[in-house]
Image 1 (tube, rainbow, N blue to C red):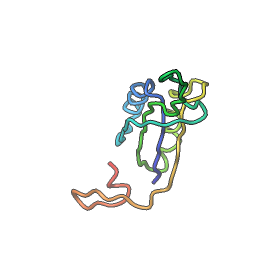
Image 2 (image 1 turned 45 degrees about the horizontal axis):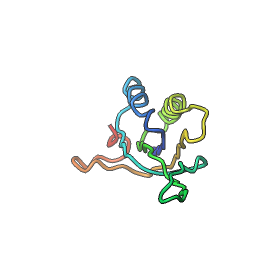
Image 3 (image 1 turned 90 degrees about the vertical axis):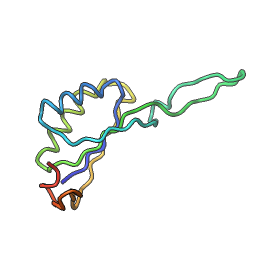
Image 4 (image 1 turned 180 degrees about the vertical axis):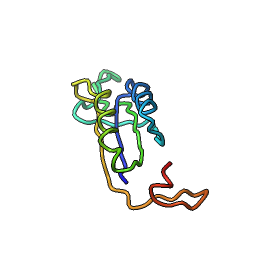
Length: 113
């Protein structure tokens, strides 16, 4: 099993959700987050001083998937989220050793669905 954590532009969320639904991929956690990378945010003036606001609104998607679904999900996210501009986001992949469904006690891949 793999955990996918993707940081994307808020404007891309609805299209990614629709594409995941069409691909019959479920089980996603979505959070509104703030952060920055190379774009360093924007500049605002306050009392005649320029302050760099180095955080931007972003969306974080988290999901745990079977290994054989990983590349399909990466392709969905990257193809929709990519604008070619700084600030498109990142995808992080980590290994998951186990998953437990609290309600039933099921473990592993059967607990994902």
